Length: 194
Picture (cartoon, helix red, strand yellow):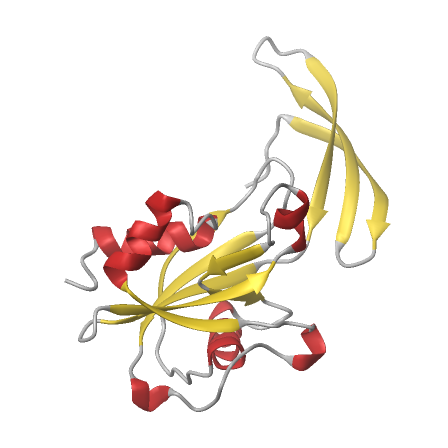
């Protein structure tokens, strides 16, 4: 459904390096009926998918650790982030994308994923919508080392944590990634690991 309170949209490309950054000028109708010209910048990096791998028997989760430059320049001392497995759709369906990312990043091959919700991660400036999944894993599903795709210059460390320890890492500030916090809290609220 289109918003009738938005008109005269003009888009100017500001950058098209890794993804695209657009300057968007438009008119927005205020509550009093008057029209106001506004300008916003929107970064389009495509949509993505994220997944929490969990093992109910062992009460563990699989997470990753990798260097994230934007966090480094914003005060994250070593730039390393502990996160759930995630990736950009790149033309795949969310389900296809996340299964491929799981194998590339963690070395686990999963056949069944469950979509639990979707969310805009930073709606004030980023167009991305993220599809959130969960999936059970066990040691028999490990088919490789993981670590990420070579052509994507990823250097991903695969981590397995007791679920309670991962939750505690949120409180201690060791996990600061929004998608990871959201999925861990989803698991806790839905008692996925008892």
